[in-house]
Image 1 (cartoon, rainbow, N blue to C red):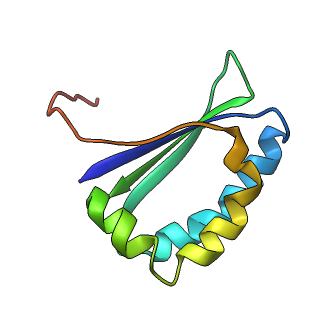
Image 2 (tube, rainbow, N blue to C red; image 1 turned 180 degrees about the horizontal axis):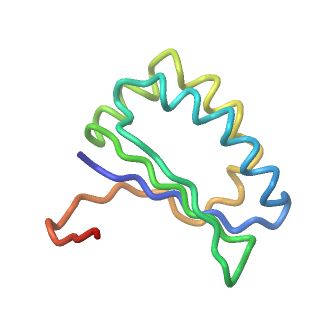
Length: 101
């Protein structure tokens, strides 16, 4: 599994617009067998900052299967207006150090 982090710093759109766009885009993620889960969070101290975390079966599956698959066009159409507000979009591998209560 790999985790993709997408950080947004909104300067052109409102947070509500981003959330609404992802309500549509997330339907595409849920329909994708390569996507294992996601969450969108908003910074409490800086409400124009958001982090989307998407869990993929692998980076290769994300890039080769999801992006070339049937769900991607609708996903991309929903989030395209926000592309210029992305400040980071990278894949991360677990170090094995984690804990949850």
